[in-house]
Image (cartoon, rainbow, N blue to C red; front, side, top):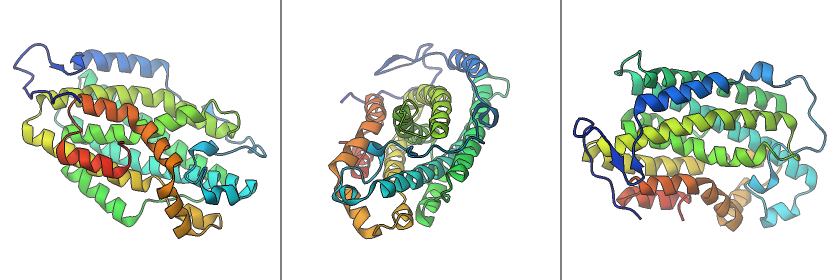
Length: 315
C-alpha cells in the first residue's frame, strides 16, 4: 500500500506528480478524448436493430455473472427459470445504470459550473453528458425490449444518493463515478463477446464499453489531479464518502425484487447470495482494477477503507 500523496495547489509547481507518476496536462487529455469521441461514438437508435426478434434460448446476461450462480438454489432451478432470472437481472442492472448515470450527469454539470466554458476540459464533460443521455435511453429501450419491468433502487438508496451527491467533494464525485463505471464495465467486457447472450444485449454492452473507456480515462485523470491538489479536509471527506458510496452501490447491485418475479423465495435467495463465495469473487474481481488504482492514489485510507471492506468490494 502506497503512502498518500501530499496535497498541493496547481500553482505550486509546473508539474503535478502522484504515486503513479507525472500527471498529464488536463487540456491535452481532454483534446485526445474529444478526438476519440468524434471517431468512436454511436447512436444506439440507428446502430442497433431494435426490430429484430429476440433469439430463442439466448441469455440476457452471462450465467456466471448472475447473483445466484453456483448456489444451492441455482442448482435446483430449471434451465427456463435460470434464463428468466438472467432477463430480470439484466433489466435490474440496466435500471441501476440509468439511476447511476443520472447522478453522474448532475455531478459533471456541477463540476464544470465554474470552469472556463471554452476549455477542452469543459467541452469533453459536455460530450460525456451527451454520451450518458444516449446510454440511459439505450438501457431503457433494452429493458422494454426484454419484456421485464424497470427495477428502481430502494427508497433508502435513492435518498442516500441524494445526500451523497449534495455533500460530495469534487474528488468524491470522480471516485463515485469510477465506482459505478468500472464494475459494470468489467461485466460488460465479458458480455459483449459472449455468443450465448442475446445479440441486442451484446450490442448494447459493446457500445457502452467503447464509450465508457473514455469516461473512465477522464475520471481517473481528474481524480488523480484532485487528490494531489485538494486540501486535506476534502481528501479525508472523499475517502469516507467514496467508502459509503461503495457500501450503498454493492447493496443496490442486486435488486431482491427480481427473485419475486421469477418465483423464488426472496429471503432464501438473498441469504444464499450473501453466503456465495462465487458472488463475492465476481464482485471483487469486477472492482479490483478500481480498488488497486484508488489505493495507489491514496483514496483507500482509514474509515474509508473500512467502509470499502464492509461493502464486500475490497478483499
